[in-house]
Image 1 (tube, helix red, strand yellow):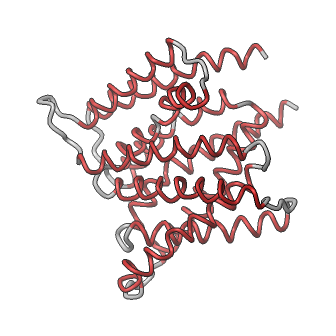
Image 2 (cartoon, one colour):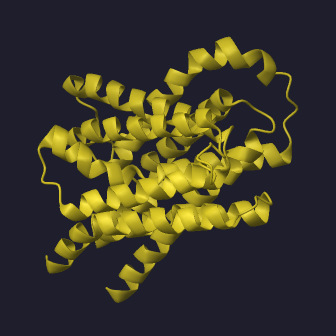
Length: 299
């Protein structure tokens, strides 16, 4: 039993590592392709890989007709709208800033729970929200309160955050009926279909002129297999074994991993404001989730 738990913690760290470095892989692909092409290829490859995995190891789970609409709406907000915001936002800001803004999703989630599901919101949730938001402000504004990061990029990334929050509403309904792997498979497939017309209209003419390199192919494969498939599978296993609260604590470390990988692989400069911002944002996230973590320990 102890060995299984250790393995699960290791798989959780792998998932966080894959998501942390995925911002670096996306920057590599952007040297060749536009964001729409990147996301279409990433989701298409991930869908194929998931169908193969589920075909070999998983049981086949059929989506009921009455849930078609919910799956379409779910997939429209994530991965389609979410990746529109994240991918285009990443074109204008550094991977570290992108990862920190995306990491605020768990902080906004209690607010969503209060307004949509009438779930109780705690004082720690509110304090954590304001602390995390102040950390983001430190990272994107200079000492004269002017944007040091692109306002467009920051806005697009918060659009991704909002899309993820809407996604949670529909995900909560579908998660009762379907396994996580089935939901991810359908989301990625529908997401690829949402991107397809935009890819054909806006990017196909430039896509066919690009000479693929080993660097490009490897970065795309890593995004599809590791970031969009295995990371979700590993994270799902972790949630099932060690619980949502403990797993979420690991997820808070994604910006740290992104900053480390960006520094060593992309030579991104990590100044004092970024370090301070990361610390403040993660502190706020830990604080906002500490109540649920304590409750999980009592169970």
